[in-house]
Image 1: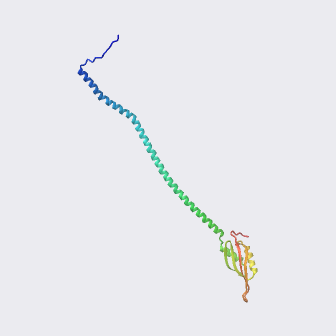
Image 2: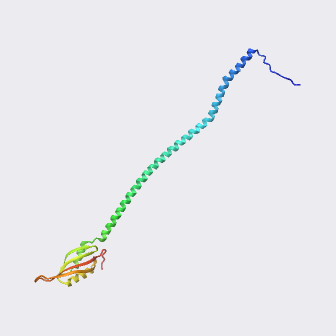
Image 3: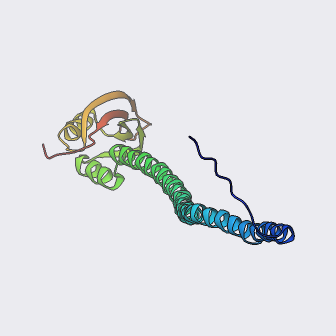
Length: 203
């Protein structure tokens, strides 16, 4: 047989009502702050590590940005320096090309230049007696020699001397004209042509 039990509050009705009110007030007074404390504690325990991690990440980002900016500035400085160096290289190349051209021109001039002092000395040495030179001119790589003499034989001797000279070669007869005025001796006006040896050697 089942036994039925029932709790019976034997406090007076007013006392029972006051106790209920006190319990409710205690719940509001201590429960809500406790709940808020728990929430704040949860938030603190959850957010503080994240905030700390965010701060670390932010610090790293700033450091990387600073490093990136430094590298960018260094790259700009490098590019500027590189452009400057390239410009200097191009300028030096232009100067080098100009110098090379000048050197080639000078070398060509030196190769083609006739040292007239040596030429005149050699001509004087090659001239026989009674033969004179009136004018000398240069055309390309040969000399045109004009003058006069007393006989054709002296002219032949002069041509032979020129061919045996280290400065001249391939002496050619161009023209001659015999002139005799009254009782004066006959003279032969001549014109010769001979090559100039650029690099003379003793022959």
